[in-house]
Image (cartoon, rainbow, N blue to C red):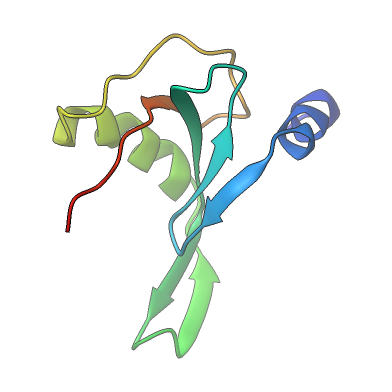
Length: 91
């Protein structure tokens, strides 16, 4: 990630961070920015590591595997940005 991209990422409000991705707010309140991480865990998080390009590949697969996500054009953030429509999940 370039210095400019890192700075832009740091300026966004982090809303959620899980094992595989980080969700950030965007300028549009109806859109979130999802950043997929290269982190990997195994054996109930007893083993941790990173897999090269895992985040980039997950970013490419996510819109295909989840038709409810409506990707929108968004300025790139590193090599794995994904703009998704904000929604409310139902239990």
